[in-house]
Length: 152
Image (tube, rainbow, N blue to C red; front, side):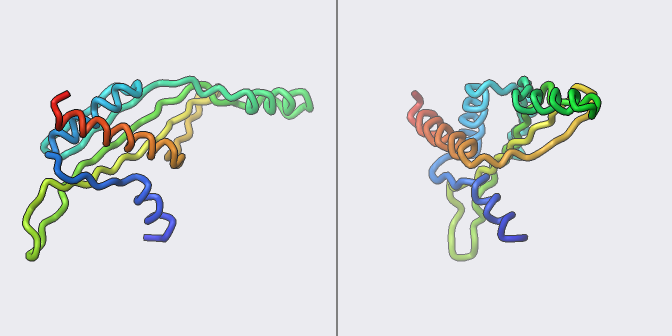
């Protein structure tokens, strides 16, 4: 892996100690639903959740640039119309070694992607890399795991 890939993985992954995998998955699904996502798939035996939400992708600057290009004789330029934001979340237990016993420690990795449909019905996809998006999710997840553990 490249240093950039490792740095990206660190942003996408957090370790949680003292919580059962099922509790982490329940807390994760609650956070995603609170953020407006619809759960698409949940496989608790594998520790996997996927979710998505639809959003408008119109961007004023992109529309303005397309108008200017058209006015200058460049023809019609497709612009972003709508998008599907997809989330993939995986919970995996920390592996016990010969020196350590199994614990209630888990890694949670989440990735956010978006698929944008343009006015000409072409698509493009990208992984979202906004650090604040990931930090915000993990902050909410930490609170949700705490509340789940306290049965609040």
